[in-house]
Amino acid sequence: MLDAAATSTVEPKTRAPPLVPDVEDIQRGYERLDCEERAVRGTPVRLFTFPGGNRDVSRTVVCLPGLGASGRSFAPMEPLARAWNLLLWTPPLKTPATHTPLQWNLSVLNHPEAGLPERFALMGSSYGSLLSIAYALEHPQRVKALVLVSPVASVRKVRRLALTLSTLVRAPRPLAYVFAPTVARVLGGRWLPAEGRAEIVREARRLSSLELMRRLRDILAADFLHRLRELRVPTLIIEGGRDLLVPPAAARDVAAHVPGARLEFLETASHLPYMSHPEAFNACVSDFLSQHPD
Image (cartoon, rainbow, N blue to C red; front, side, top):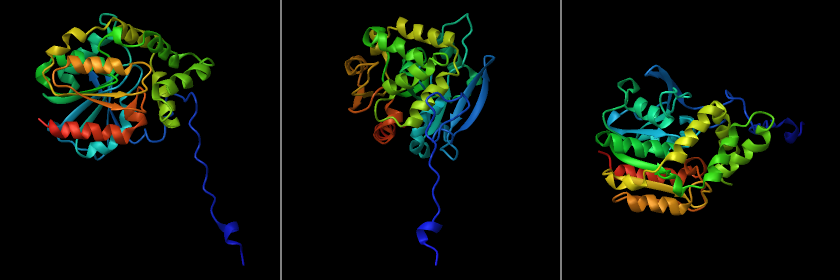
């Protein structure tokens, strides 16, 4: 009689994510998204959605990612896709010389070719929060709710050195093997899974160094703090208690300037709470959106 242990099937080990993946090596958990490429003002824009997700346009949430990220970074928000039409927007990879990246993204987002509903909720993380604030100020009639994650409203309130060092995720090989994983760990914190860290590195490396630096200059020139009181839209601010780029005091300052803003801290999260703490993050967002559906 054969030994049962000898005949058992040995499960193959899951391959560890590479420290610096190829740009087409989408990481496990981030590949389950549909991707549509739209031509807006002559530039390609990638828009990710969840297969089988809600498609009710009245429940649309447009999600804008951070400095070098894509809409794929919001993949851990999949549980929310049952109730909300999540459109995971990716800014164009290249900005024309006639515009700053901030100006170009605002123009592209508001262009009819973007195909966005007349009104929608808007979520932005880090650089995406800067875009979200600027868009809500410029087009208040289109934004019915605002979610700001690790909010960037004024360069005076972020750590310039840490922000500048974050661009090292785009360092050329072989320097990338030294800098990129460290930067990803700082951004995501200790609780971000290895797949999430690899995905940050992978997507950032799609951008040219010039484009990354131009977006960084947008942040270093930003100062919307004095205009936040103009916002008249329900606003949720989510901040990681261990964010090394946008300190918790900065999030409190943003919340103090936005009329009626709700502030939520995820104490053990860092700069990317939707990737590192998806359950707590999704619960906060779901509760907020359900209170402001229209």
